[in-house]
Image 1 (cartoon, helix red, strand yellow):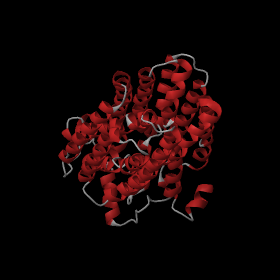
Image 2: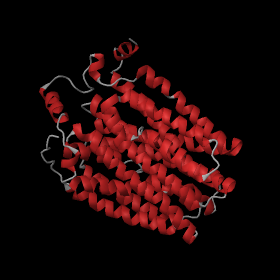
Image 3: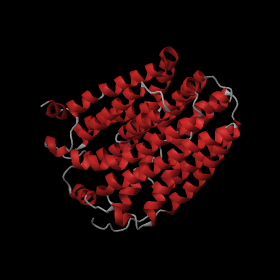
Image 4: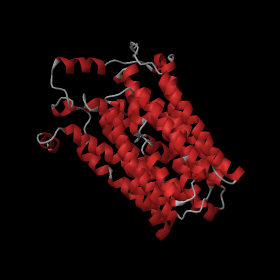
Length: 417
């Protein structure tokens, strides 16, 4: 009843977008915690940077597995149940984390439980919502979902630093657990599966022949086995592996410790990360708009090249102005790669394949992130700083730019699976 009342005033697709945005924002906020936890865990338990980084890598890997899992769960149980399941798992993991006293517990509670829970609430859900509820502006909607991750970082990271300073890392974990639990309420109350559940068409579907053609294209499907036989799916997965390596894995995990060890205080470094989050929102929304209009392969090549150049400069930054410039430039394309990657997957293999295929491409992203999170810690322990890690990320960024331009421009005919 409430849903129908709302849809009479505004298309309910935007309500679904708002709820999904909130859930993705909260999950992304949880993912920022490792930057804040590394130093306190070292001090309290005497664990090495490498061992803590390995636990973070485990979490990132399970986070990546949550992508294809989310596609399967949504297909079987629906969006609402998948969202609630992910949120509950995060709360359980964070609650258990409060009583840890051994490294294996960090691996289990943060690595596995929080990893799977947040992975089930990643941008695979945003891609599914865009395909189900919209026939136009899909790139923009995906960009909005990507911006949720940036907003989560923007809101949660400074708050976590402040809460950790005031009440310790356990107090900070309690607060984010409460935020995650509270987000279950709007999902239960307002989330819906399909436009037809409310007697609506998808946003942008006006019933014309063009809309019917769009619907036929939406039904085009390529099985995972058939997609795996093409070079394009491996190019998409390979470039997204690099995306994960150069974002969540290296910068998302190690930028704050690097900045502190490079002479910046935690508040100044946090301000730079907040700026990065702001520019991330701008860049991701702009990328969504651009991906509806321009060659997505070229967009990806530009994004990866700029990212590689900015990371290569990071070891040489020693003052606040330089760190802010890095945050501005790098932040513009942190998640800007998501809309064109999803679009290329849909164009090449059919929109009905996005949930499953993009789920596995997203898993490749998080494998790259897990590798970088662990290798970054090992490199820091071995050499005393992150310079080699940053240079490796820059080199991979330029390789990903080449991968992107190699993807076929004309989509092939999909094989029904």
